[in-house]
Image (tube, rainbow, N blue to C red; front, side, top):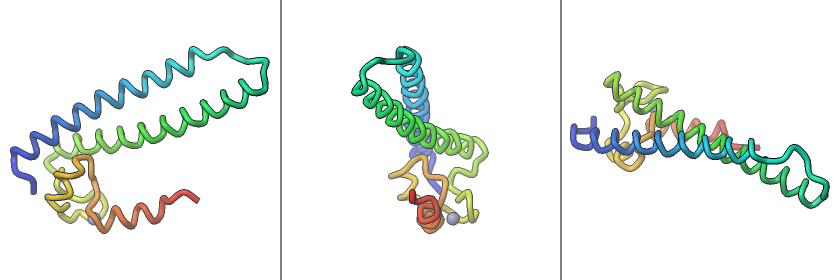
Length: 119
Ligand SMILES: [Zn+2]
């Protein structure tokens, strides 16, 4: 279990990430909304599709991280921050210090990544 000092430090970090990710996600939506509905040049279309795909990927990654950050903050409030979401075991203290938004212990994280690896 993390001591109070590190928990406070992690909470501060998580809250900063939460604010930053929320702002970034808002910015991406604004950029997408400002785009003209169509363009006449093929090259423009191709780059637009590429931009949109890139934005989509970035958005998904940001959302995923934001989910983890929100989940970690929620767990802090519940007093289960140091417990693994999957097996209920204790998450290594060093892991939480290095990765404040970790919600799984190392073995569970490794297993989760194996399953969610892009094909
Ligand atoms: Zn676990």
